[in-house]
Length: 229
Image (tube, rainbow, N blue to C red):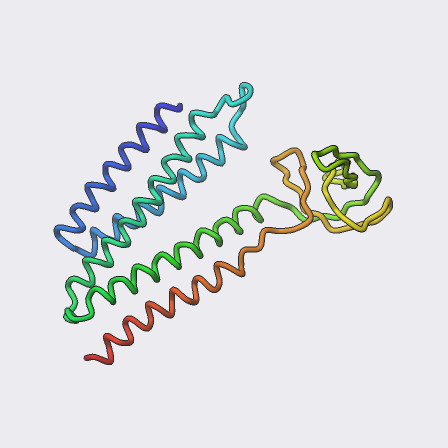
């Protein structure tokens, strides 16, 4: 299966390059829409395939699906890079066809910066959604402590016991100011041997301001255009 995933990724990448060249040369709306849709669908599909090979696929041993996982990861990075190139090329082509020749470079840079800021926000938003999608909320009880030896001496991590579908699970996690018998809210990863954490991923402090700043830059760009008319 690994070689089929690799061949499919190469074919899709070639199609993206051909479409990008057509978009730049002919500058037709349908070409741009087709290319952007293809890139987004490719990234989402590969992300799901990567998740399948990492979590759901039958494993024949250590690193049995490593080739497929590496192919998906590399292709996702490449497709994201292509998506960024597509958006920046679209901005440059769009600005090139505008009438404001005097401020063309400044306005183009403004849109590119806005796009980069929004892309950073999207990365952190997707990371938050993916991480929180994998975990389940429940309550656990501190039943004991486990000694963890490190370079700076020993630490004692509480062992948390919790129940899932009538079965008891235990895991240790570095939590301070607790004692045996304490109950606390935890989150566990069903696909990772019920490994626990005590918090959800929260990147709102990054992606919300990124979306606001990027949107304001775009709004300011087109507001100036409308005023000048």
